[in-house]
Length: 333
Image (cartoon, rainbow, N blue to C red):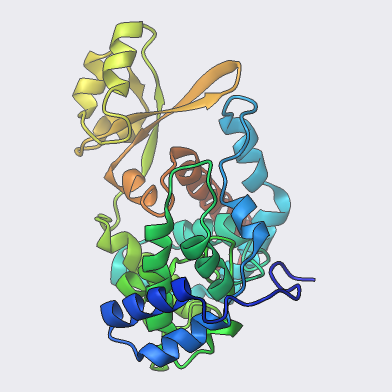
């Protein structure tokens, strides 16, 4: 049975539901009765309330353990098949936005395993639950989810979708790229030319929308995301380079002045970079020199570990395509 599909009482027309419906209708210029009727069909889902809570304290962060979840043979093979199936669209994204196919492939692979893990909750239920019954025990984000609920209703109305039929994650993220409804309204585009923005079923719309999201957050066309680097051994110099976190701040010369050794590409790079530290539990950390484009990838999910997993998965898929090309003597499909 899919998450959230068990029989449960709907919210109905409770006073707080009607107040929320009125506020959302007014804010988003929607028909108040349609909003009230739609929200009355939403269900309170205890699983959503559990899943939104922070993970229990456990082992220290480990980039190597995190990496192994995503850069593994099955996901790489699925990424290869996805790239083959959508190569013309990915190439169109490269030409129009300057976003490399491997980065888009990496994002979709980390987000949903190329569609295998989209989430089975009704988005209406998830967002209503987090709007009306946000659990205690962590900072209250109900206002954020009320906004997302409103954006979801706007999108559903615009695209003539039945709000009760749209499935997604426990937090309300939708489709191959796991866009929140607000991001759909701000960044999603009709990239297959059918007149609709379909984040649930159109791979072309998802691919184009991911690239548009990155560009809207400052992506620099045809620029790299990162370079290999050996961090300085002196604690003070290391601390100085780490102080800005992932904000690109230092030139290649400044990296060298602080005792960091960049690879050849990083040494020649003319833009600012950040020294990004990725912890490995009790082992020594890993380091990477992140550019502005690395920081942009973290806008999709605010984690350097996530960004590095996306980048490395995309590269692994691209490497597999290159090996296949050499082995067969054919151009990439």
